[in-house]
Amino acid sequence: MALYNLEPTSETAIVIGDYLQQKGQYAEALKYLNAAIANEEDPDRKLSLTLSIAGSELGSGNARSAADYARRAISLNPESGYGYYILAQSYASGINGCSGFN
Image 1 (spheres, rainbow, N blue to C red):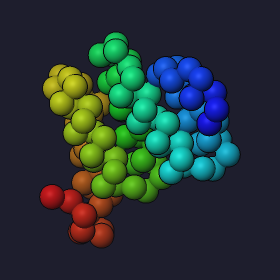
Image 2: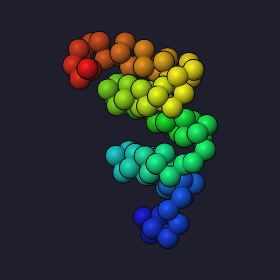
Image 3: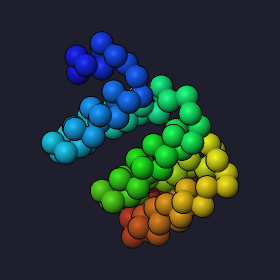
């Protein structure tokens, strides 16, 4: 999006990512939300963004992706209980498929 090219900040990426999610363009939104994480300097905000994506991925039925983001959140803050919760929920929801987890 042109706005992000003009001002490639975490805040801009979040706004665009949220807008794309509302439009149902989840894959494109994820690109911007990942850019927001990459551009974010505040560790707490980076953790919050990562957990938000993990929760969204879990809610969308993407258990493997949710587990990946949960692991990233745990690496950012091993004391984050929510990261472990999402990881456990990801494994529990993925058990029916029994594939895609390492």
